[in-house]
Length: 278
Image (cartoon, rainbow, N blue to C red; front, side):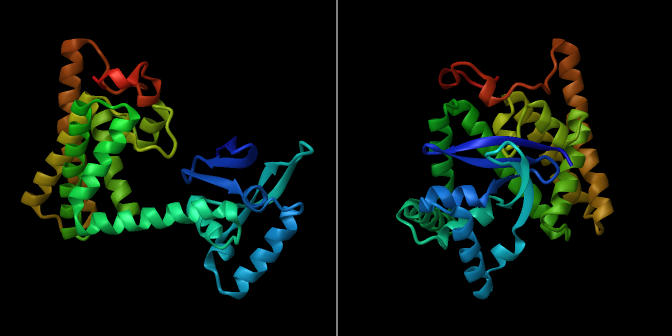
């Protein structure tokens, strides 16, 4: 299992982290986080007591936490308890510390905003537009990206009607579409663009977005006409929809002489604030 390591800075202190390429998750050293949040002189002891208390309360987060080897201060690789992002946020909620309070307030704010968006989806689009603008994307690209969200929602609604399960089955069908139009898997596509947890579509050029939308919209229409009754039938349709967009990609590349699927991503663009992903 391929993993990549890094050190995350938390204010002035370091929190060890580990990227699991297979699971596509970051894992963080719980002891390091506890040290930052509590300023305890003995973070391991603090974590042992907290872990015991949470276990007695029946906290499933603690039960699901596991250990991985990370480099200790002495330079040696030692097993240490780790948590993924979701688990970490849950643990932070259980830490009675002034330093944990800003995180708790932020989580509460995110929860309230999520409820607002469920009640009024337009609020979500407005927030998304604002977020992309702050990141430096052009309004033209953002409009394209928002349209891609609409197209994706139509596709997943169609999959729901055909009994496709969220999660792994969604991922398998998405991968079929991606392979058919790009010639590579979704995972390879993200690796090409040097991405980890980032959303792949946020790093597509305008043309990549258009072709991805074509692939997903075509898959939706074929599925509506053929009304697949099994997952395997939906898988065949996903490949058909992606192939149509893939043929379009090949024609464009033949005319322009340029590759459409490239390693170009939003992070690598210079002066992104004044440029559009072309």
